[in-house]
Length: 342
Ligand SMILES: [Zn+2]
Image (tube, rainbow, N blue to C red; front, side, top):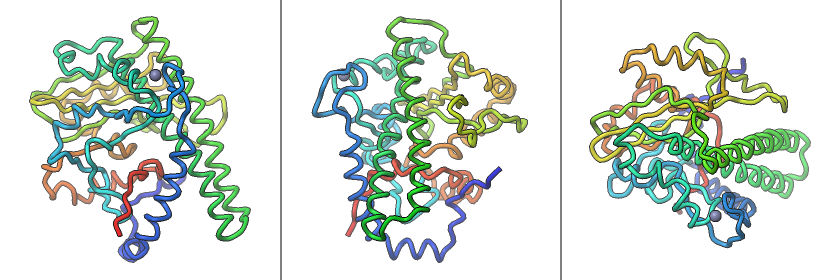
């Protein structure tokens, strides 16, 4: 297996070089990402299909949950741990993990059950679970659309500055091919999930872990992740299998901090059989190990984690956590909110 790239392994000299070039990089990135955002802007609402000029700033984690851990309206990003000079270490709640794919009207209706904290007095319904899955698929549709536009713009930018380069073109073409395949999969998942909600189908997802904790956890997360291995090292997803027929099976995780309690949920699509061993192993863990495993999974496989600014600095400089958080794939869409700070 190829070694995973670890951001935490970037040495001091490279960090210094990044700092030196940061203004140029941010300028270039700001220009390319601005253009890519424009290019990837939809013309129709993904949900109701109506034509719109303006789209809602939808939050991957409901802003009302994020506010429970914000200090002065801000939360830490995972870069608070990895600490790379080119990325933001904190963000305002209003632009944390957002995507623009649906109209305001749809945004106010299609997630309303799961975004209402009162609905967590009871175990979440099938409808709430499906709404969470629907949004997770949409978040990825937004990311891939943006990345596809960005790779195309990068290709043009390189050609403009240095002339056509076969190696760069081949690399970006490969990224484009994979992103396009991914996008089609997420659109399929989205359509399927929409149908589940509209038809009111039950038991389409399997919620194998649900826990209400009686304090506010300092972390917020909502997303789907792709596990490579289970706890015994058996392959769940072969991420290097690029065959059109091979379908990755994802795990949905939610960590919702509330005013004086927190909700933690893990669920899968019911036919994601490759995750069966994983959830059996997970359910046999003790409470503390379950929480550690969830932390390990989200920090190593996602960038969409937001943390309270009340978390002690000691935690942020922990070498083991830095290594786990650095083990992430490069997600250009995650840095589209970089501000040029000249
Ligand atoms: Zn709509």
